[in-house]
Image (cartoon, rainbow, N blue to C red; front, side):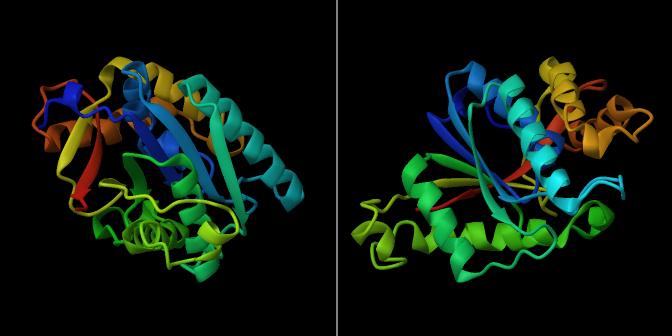
Length: 241
């Protein structure tokens, strides 16, 4: 494992398909980087309207509720800049339009590092994955390389909006099949659970949310060689020159 104290970036962009994806997968790492001074932006691609368990609730009401939950949860984690692209939940494709919108956010935020969903299928946890995650990961990867750095890709971003190209040098992939970095999040575990519980529309049905996370994060910690009783989030780090 790398020295975690050396890995906190100055600026970070976290892209996720749905509200609550970040809290489930990476919020413990983000909280610790914020404590070390990292400036963080969340970008949520879909409106979350296909989520939840209340069939009586109109889908637009669900989307509005999930947006509010995400803003509140991000604030608890220390993130004030939360952006929503508003794509329909469950129908995401790595389209030119989505890649352009992601390029816009990258050029506005100018992050040193980005956390994105893996575009690969993790067959060991396929029941936990959603096609939107992989589509968003694919679109993010294309946006980061080569489109956000290329002044001739989505030329209107530069010509009409004045957004200069930007190079993201490092990607941290979440939920992928081949993690190579495990971050100990034991010290912020309670805050992570609290941030996730704010997503009431998605988590209220869990009898033991903390226990579920403890088991999952404990498996990551074991895979990362951490001592018994520790909890970790898992990533695949990809360096881009």
